[in-house]
Length: 272
Image (cartoon, one colour):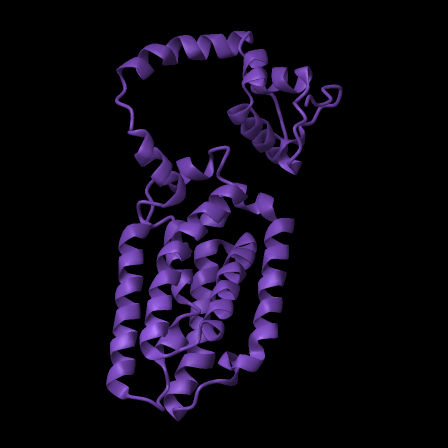
Protein backbone atom coordinates (compact mmCIF):
# COMPACT_ATOMS: atom_id res chain seq x y z
CA UNK A 1 0.00 0.00 0.00
CA UNK A 2 1.41 3.38 -0.93
CA UNK A 3 0.61 6.65 0.75
CA UNK A 4 -0.10 10.08 -0.54
CA UNK A 5 3.08 12.13 -1.00
CA UNK A 6 1.35 15.31 -1.98
CA UNK A 7 1.22 16.73 1.55
CA UNK A 8 4.08 17.94 3.72
CA UNK A 9 3.46 15.48 6.51
CA UNK A 10 3.96 11.83 7.25
CA UNK A 11 1.30 9.53 8.58
CA UNK A 12 3.81 7.42 10.49
CA UNK A 13 2.98 9.14 13.77
CA UNK A 14 -0.67 8.20 13.44
CA UNK A 15 -0.05 4.58 12.60
CA UNK A 16 -0.72 4.80 8.84
CA UNK A 17 1.65 3.88 5.99
CA UNK A 18 1.76 7.31 4.36
CA UNK A 19 5.21 8.42 3.27
CA UNK A 20 6.76 11.87 3.80
CA UNK A 21 6.63 14.18 0.82
CA UNK A 22 9.71 15.00 -1.27
CA UNK A 23 9.88 18.62 0.03
CA UNK A 24 9.74 17.35 3.61
CA UNK A 25 12.50 14.81 2.99
CA UNK A 26 14.61 17.47 1.28
CA UNK A 27 14.15 19.84 4.24
CA UNK A 28 15.05 17.00 6.62
CA UNK A 29 18.22 16.19 4.66
CA UNK A 30 19.26 19.86 4.60
CA UNK A 31 18.70 20.26 8.34
CA UNK A 32 15.82 22.67 7.84
CA UNK A 33 13.37 23.79 10.50
CA UNK A 34 10.86 20.97 11.17
CA UNK A 35 8.45 20.73 14.09
CA UNK A 36 9.60 18.30 16.79
CA UNK A 37 6.67 15.90 16.43
CA UNK A 38 6.97 15.88 12.63
CA UNK A 39 10.74 15.36 12.85
CA UNK A 40 10.21 12.38 15.17
CA UNK A 41 7.62 10.95 12.79
CA UNK A 42 9.93 11.31 9.78
CA UNK A 43 12.85 9.63 11.56
CA UNK A 44 10.63 6.80 12.81
CA UNK A 45 9.31 6.29 9.28
CA UNK A 46 12.77 6.27 7.73
CA UNK A 47 13.92 3.64 10.20
CA UNK A 48 11.33 1.15 8.93
CA UNK A 49 10.82 2.23 5.29
CA UNK A 50 13.60 1.25 2.86
CA UNK A 51 12.00 3.01 -0.17
CA UNK A 52 11.98 6.35 1.65
CA UNK A 53 15.59 5.86 2.74
CA UNK A 54 16.34 5.31 -0.93
CA UNK A 55 14.58 8.57 -1.76
CA UNK A 56 16.73 10.30 0.86
CA UNK A 57 20.03 8.76 -0.30
CA UNK A 58 20.57 10.99 -3.38
CA UNK A 59 20.63 14.08 -1.18
CA UNK A 60 24.18 15.58 -1.18
CA UNK A 61 24.24 15.91 2.60
CA UNK A 62 23.26 12.27 3.08
CA UNK A 63 25.91 11.13 0.63
CA UNK A 64 28.61 13.17 2.36
CA UNK A 65 27.66 11.89 5.83
CA UNK A 66 27.57 8.29 4.65
CA UNK A 67 30.96 8.63 2.96
CA UNK A 68 32.47 9.66 6.30
CA UNK A 69 30.61 7.08 8.39
CA UNK A 70 31.09 4.00 6.21
CA UNK A 71 34.83 3.48 7.01
CA UNK A 72 34.19 4.03 10.72
CA UNK A 73 31.33 1.54 10.79
CA UNK A 74 33.52 -1.08 9.12
CA UNK A 75 36.07 -0.79 11.94
CA UNK A 76 33.56 -0.52 14.82
CA UNK A 77 32.81 -3.76 16.74
CA UNK A 78 29.13 -4.60 16.53
CA UNK A 79 27.07 -5.67 19.50
CA UNK A 80 25.60 -9.19 19.10
CA UNK A 81 22.07 -9.11 17.70
CA UNK A 82 20.58 -10.94 20.69
CA UNK A 83 22.07 -8.38 23.07
CA UNK A 84 20.79 -5.49 20.95
CA UNK A 85 17.29 -6.93 21.08
CA UNK A 86 17.53 -7.40 24.84
CA UNK A 87 18.57 -3.76 25.34
CA UNK A 88 15.56 -2.75 23.25
CA UNK A 89 13.38 -4.21 25.99
CA UNK A 90 15.35 -3.85 29.21
CA UNK A 91 17.44 -0.92 30.38
CA UNK A 92 20.88 -2.00 31.65
CA UNK A 93 20.22 0.14 34.72
CA UNK A 94 17.05 -1.80 35.57
CA UNK A 95 18.79 -5.12 36.29
CA UNK A 96 19.87 -4.41 39.89
CA UNK A 97 16.50 -2.81 40.61
CA UNK A 98 14.60 -5.84 39.36
CA UNK A 99 16.76 -8.07 41.55
CA UNK A 100 16.05 -5.79 44.52
CA UNK A 101 12.29 -5.95 43.81
CA UNK A 102 12.38 -9.73 43.86
CA UNK A 103 14.31 -9.63 47.14
CA UNK A 104 11.70 -7.27 48.63
CA UNK A 105 8.97 -9.66 47.49
CA UNK A 106 10.76 -12.60 49.10
CA UNK A 107 11.24 -10.63 52.31
CA UNK A 108 7.54 -9.72 52.40
CA UNK A 109 6.62 -13.40 51.95
CA UNK A 110 8.96 -14.40 54.77
CA UNK A 111 7.49 -11.79 57.13
CA UNK A 112 3.95 -12.84 56.25
CA UNK A 113 4.81 -16.45 57.01
CA UNK A 114 6.39 -15.52 60.33
CA UNK A 115 3.43 -13.35 61.32
CA UNK A 116 0.94 -16.13 60.69
CA UNK A 117 -2.69 -16.02 59.50
CA UNK A 118 -5.04 -13.19 60.41
CA UNK A 119 -2.37 -10.49 60.26
CA UNK A 120 -1.87 -7.71 57.75
CA UNK A 121 -0.23 -9.06 54.59
CA UNK A 122 2.91 -7.18 53.59
CA UNK A 123 2.80 -8.83 50.15
CA UNK A 124 -0.60 -7.28 49.51
CA UNK A 125 0.62 -3.88 50.72
CA UNK A 126 3.74 -3.69 48.56
CA UNK A 127 2.45 -5.47 45.44
CA UNK A 128 0.84 -2.38 43.81
CA UNK A 129 4.02 -0.28 43.92
CA UNK A 130 6.72 -2.87 43.22
CA UNK A 131 6.56 -2.58 39.40
CA UNK A 132 6.70 1.20 39.72
CA UNK A 133 10.24 0.95 41.09
CA UNK A 134 11.42 -1.01 38.06
CA UNK A 135 9.69 1.36 35.63
CA UNK A 136 11.31 4.34 37.33
CA UNK A 137 14.74 2.69 37.09
CA UNK A 138 14.20 2.12 33.37
CA UNK A 139 13.67 5.85 32.81
CA UNK A 140 15.96 7.44 35.37
CA UNK A 141 18.56 9.99 34.23
CA UNK A 142 20.69 9.24 37.28
CA UNK A 143 20.76 5.48 36.70
CA UNK A 144 21.09 5.32 32.92
CA UNK A 145 24.18 7.10 31.52
CA UNK A 146 22.82 6.73 27.97
CA UNK A 147 19.42 8.32 28.67
CA UNK A 148 19.97 11.29 26.30
CA UNK A 149 21.01 9.00 23.45
CA UNK A 150 18.07 6.67 24.04
CA UNK A 151 15.54 9.48 24.39
CA UNK A 152 16.70 11.00 21.11
CA UNK A 153 16.29 7.82 19.02
CA UNK A 154 13.27 7.49 16.71
CA UNK A 155 11.90 4.60 18.76
CA UNK A 156 12.16 6.39 22.09
CA UNK A 157 8.46 7.15 22.24
CA UNK A 158 5.52 5.07 23.35
CA UNK A 159 6.75 1.76 21.83
CA UNK A 160 9.93 1.85 23.95
CA UNK A 161 7.90 2.80 27.02
CA UNK A 162 5.64 -0.21 26.58
CA UNK A 163 8.57 -2.55 25.88
CA UNK A 164 10.45 -1.55 29.00
CA UNK A 165 7.30 -1.59 31.13
CA UNK A 166 6.39 -5.03 29.80
CA UNK A 167 9.91 -6.27 30.63
CA UNK A 168 9.51 -5.05 34.21
CA UNK A 169 6.08 -6.66 34.57
CA UNK A 170 7.40 -9.89 33.08
CA UNK A 171 9.79 -10.16 36.02
CA UNK A 172 7.71 -8.66 38.84
CA UNK A 173 4.29 -10.22 38.17
CA UNK A 174 5.47 -13.88 38.15
CA UNK A 175 7.31 -13.18 41.39
CA UNK A 176 4.11 -11.81 42.92
CA UNK A 177 2.12 -14.77 41.59
CA UNK A 178 4.46 -17.10 43.49
CA UNK A 179 4.27 -14.87 46.57
CA UNK A 180 0.47 -14.87 46.41
CA UNK A 181 0.37 -18.64 46.09
CA UNK A 182 2.64 -19.07 49.13
CA UNK A 183 0.73 -16.58 51.30
CA UNK A 184 -2.75 -17.45 50.04
CA UNK A 185 -3.57 -14.04 48.53
CA UNK A 186 -5.95 -14.11 45.58
CA UNK A 187 -4.66 -12.84 42.26
CA UNK A 188 -7.60 -10.45 41.87
CA UNK A 189 -6.70 -8.55 45.04
CA UNK A 190 -3.29 -7.33 43.87
CA UNK A 191 -3.06 -7.66 40.07
CA UNK A 192 -5.38 -4.79 39.09
CA UNK A 193 -3.88 -2.37 41.67
CA UNK A 194 -0.44 -3.38 40.38
CA UNK A 195 -1.35 -2.62 36.75
CA UNK A 196 -3.26 0.54 37.70
CA UNK A 197 -0.27 1.93 39.59
CA UNK A 198 2.02 1.16 36.67
CA UNK A 199 -0.17 2.89 34.09
CA UNK A 200 -0.81 5.74 36.53
CA UNK A 201 2.92 6.29 36.84
CA UNK A 202 3.33 6.46 33.07
CA UNK A 203 0.30 8.74 32.70
CA UNK A 204 1.54 11.16 35.36
CA UNK A 205 5.01 10.80 33.87
CA UNK A 206 3.82 12.52 30.68
CA UNK A 207 3.44 15.65 32.80
CA UNK A 208 6.20 15.56 35.44
CA UNK A 209 8.51 12.79 34.21
CA UNK A 210 8.34 9.06 34.90
CA UNK A 211 10.85 9.00 37.77
CA UNK A 212 9.19 11.89 39.59
CA UNK A 213 5.78 10.32 39.07
CA UNK A 214 7.00 7.00 40.49
CA UNK A 215 8.48 8.67 43.57
CA UNK A 216 5.32 10.74 44.15
CA UNK A 217 2.89 7.83 43.82
CA UNK A 218 5.03 5.48 45.92
CA UNK A 219 5.34 8.08 48.67
CA UNK A 220 1.60 8.77 48.58
CA UNK A 221 0.84 5.04 48.85
CA UNK A 222 3.25 4.64 51.75
CA UNK A 223 1.76 7.56 53.70
CA UNK A 224 -1.92 7.06 52.91
CA UNK A 225 -2.16 3.25 52.88
CA UNK A 226 0.88 1.40 54.20
CA UNK A 227 1.52 3.46 57.35
CA UNK A 228 -2.11 3.50 58.64
CA UNK A 229 -2.54 -0.20 57.83
CA UNK A 230 0.51 -1.20 59.85
CA UNK A 231 -0.29 1.25 62.65
CA UNK A 232 -3.87 -0.02 63.16
CA UNK A 233 -3.25 -3.63 62.02
CA UNK A 234 -6.24 -3.39 59.72
CA UNK A 235 -6.10 -3.80 55.93
CA UNK A 236 -7.22 -0.71 54.05
CA UNK A 237 -10.55 -0.87 52.24
CA UNK A 238 -8.87 0.11 48.95
CA UNK A 239 -7.47 -3.44 48.71
CA UNK A 240 -10.76 -5.24 49.28
CA UNK A 241 -12.36 -7.35 46.55
CA UNK A 242 -15.18 -4.78 46.21
CA UNK A 243 -12.77 -2.14 44.90
CA UNK A 244 -11.88 -4.15 41.78
CA UNK A 245 -14.10 -1.98 39.49
CA UNK A 246 -12.40 1.16 40.83
CA UNK A 247 -8.94 -0.18 40.04
CA UNK A 248 -10.14 -1.26 36.60
CA UNK A 249 -11.42 2.27 35.97
CA UNK A 250 -8.09 3.79 37.09
CA UNK A 251 -6.28 1.41 34.74
CA UNK A 252 -8.52 2.42 31.81
CA UNK A 253 -8.08 6.14 32.51
CA UNK A 254 -4.31 5.71 32.74
CA UNK A 255 -4.18 3.95 29.37
CA UNK A 256 -6.33 6.67 27.81
CA UNK A 257 -4.04 9.44 29.12
CA UNK A 258 -0.96 7.60 27.87
CA UNK A 259 -2.49 7.20 24.41
CA UNK A 260 -3.53 10.85 24.17
CA UNK A 261 -0.17 12.17 25.42
CA UNK A 262 2.07 9.58 23.73
CA UNK A 263 4.29 12.22 22.10
CA UNK A 264 5.41 13.38 25.56
CA UNK A 265 7.63 10.29 25.76
CA UNK A 266 9.70 11.57 22.82
CA UNK A 267 11.02 14.44 24.96
CA UNK A 268 13.90 14.26 27.42
CA UNK A 269 11.64 15.54 30.21
CA UNK A 270 9.94 12.13 30.32
CA UNK A 271 13.11 10.61 31.83
CA UNK A 272 13.06 12.88 34.85
